[in-house]
Length: 173
Length: 156
Image 1: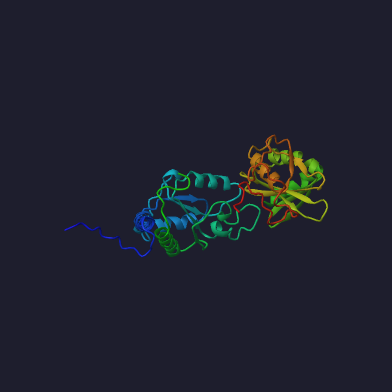
Image 2: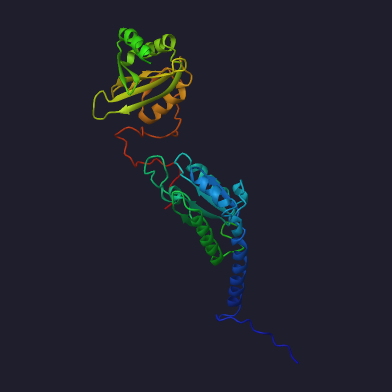
């Protein structure tokens, strides 16, 4: 009996490129699944939200359940930059440099209302939201946010990671 | 407290000072030219050996515009004292107290940052809370509240 190759079940037409798209999508799903459960956060902790950050990372709430518990105190080893607290204009160059040192892929969480929008520090000293200087993926408002809100933020970020593309060769590669 | 207040009332008017009392704290009003002499007397004769703080008040549009406020504490009498000096907008400067109290250095730098008060005799007047290149003095009443001076360019 002659060998007949089984066609790859795809809906899109277009032959070779469509098959490649299918494999790429499956690869993105796999890589996204792996990445969303191995978030290594870098806590950029500047203010009182640190207390809430400690509460959410310790055992009663336990972000380790989401694979996001082990903080790396070097930005070069981290995937998730958690900006916890007020960022002043004097400190903004430090935050920018930390962000630039992180390897792709990287995500940023604005933890608390000061990092999100400046909060009640509407004055000369505070940056009115860290998204003025670096891109932000997830905003967690609150002064300080409840641990449940932070966990919700981490879960939404995981959904975002699972849904997004994960190219092997990036723009900067 | 009452005893030292009476002694201050007898000693300080010779140095162009006016001694009053507010909320149980002696308050000394004096001209800026007399500041260094008065603090020397307070330190040597009244044992006010701890420099607590120096700050200023912007009374815009009143003239003279600024009031420089010093606080001291005596660790042997357990008494605080407040010194008030008015300085004009044209020349907002008083004598530095660094030769008497080493701790005055940082606080005078902060006061210079925020209000632009000059401290003659303080050799190190670099910004301490603000950053190099900041224009103006943010706690002055005529500084716009939301005027930012970012160091990192904003994203588009």
